Image 1 (cartoon, protein in one colour):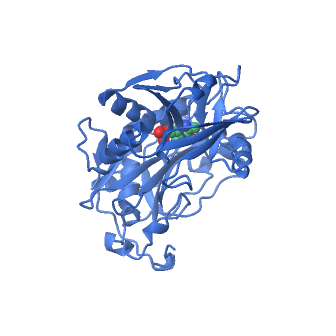
Image 2 (cartoon, rainbow, N blue to C red):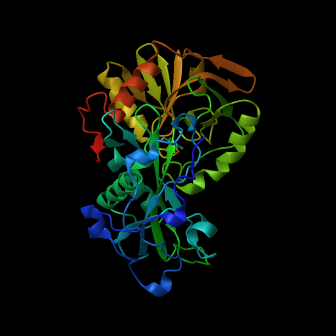
Image 3 (cartoon, rainbow, N blue to C red):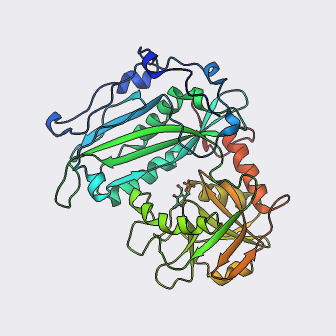
Length: 389
Ligand SMILES: Cc1ncc(COP(=O)(O)O)c(C=O)c1O
C-alpha cells in the first residue's frame, strides 16, 4: 500500500528551484496569448521534498499503475514557432479547448523512459537523447513542431530531479517519465492545430506485466492489425494505441498476457507486441523484425541488439515468417516498460508453442547486462546513461 497522505497538496510550499536550467527556462507561455487556449498550470518554484520523505512509501507494492508525483514540466508553442520557454509546475490537471487538435483528430505523440536510482543514491537516465530524436521523427510525421533534443533532455532531467523522492531505491523499480507532445490549439476542419504543448510527467513503476518473474504467454492476432504500410506504426503517436485495445482486451480475457501482431498485408510476418519489440533465439542467432515503417524502433531493441553482438551473438534484423516461431528455442520481448521479458508460449489459433525460460537463457543474460548498465552496477562503456544528480 502506497501512503499518499503524507503531504496534503494544500500545504506544499512555493519557492524557487535552484537549478540553473530552471532559471534559464523559467517563464510563461510563449506566443500570442489570444491563441493560447489551453491554460498553463501554475509554475512551481522548488521541490520542498528530500529523498528522506519517501521512506514511508511501500515500494514493494509498485506495479505499472499511475502514482501521481509532485511535479510536471510544461512548454508550449504556436504552429509556426519553436518551443522556447518551459517550466515545472505542480502535477495536476490541464485545461483544454473542446476543439483541441489532440481531442478531435488525435494529433499527439508520447515517449517513455526511466530514471534509475544507483546503489549510491544517484540518478541515471537511459539514452534520453534517443527518445528525443524519436519524438522529433514522430513530430515530423504528425505535422507538429517538436522540442529540440536539448530541450527534451533538459525537461526530462528537471522532471526527474523535481520528483526524485519518487525514484524507488535500487532494485525496487524506477521512475517512469512520460513526455507528451500534443496539439492543444482549437481546430474544426482537419488541419494541424494552431498551438502545441510539450509536457513531461512521472510515476514510479515496477513490473509492466503482472507475470513478475514468470514468462509471458502471447496470442498471435489474426484479425486486427496494429499498423499498415505507409501508416504511423513506426512512430509513437497516441493514435496507434487505442485501436490495439480491442485485441489486447480479448487476449487478456482468454488468459494471455498480450498480443503478437502480424503484417497487415499477408498476415504472415511477425511485427511486434502491443508495447514491445520481439526477438527469437535459435542457436547463437538472434532474429528480430526489421524496422521498415510498421514497427516502433525501440530504444531497448537497439540496445539489446548491441549488447547481444558484443556478447558474441549473431543478430539478424529481417522479415520473420510466423512458421519460424516453431523453430525458436527462446523468444523474448524488449521495451522500456517491460525491460527484457521472457516469452513462455505463443498461441496461434489452436496451436501453442512453448519456449525455454529461466536460468541460463539468452534472455536472462541480456536482461542482466542491460539492467546492470541502466542502474549503474555494470560499467557503461558506451555512454548510454546520463547521470543527473
Ligand atoms: C509499440 C511499441 N513497440 C515497442 C516499444 C519499445 O520501445 P522502447 O524500447 O523504446 O521502450 C514500445 C514502447 O514504447 C511500443 O509502444
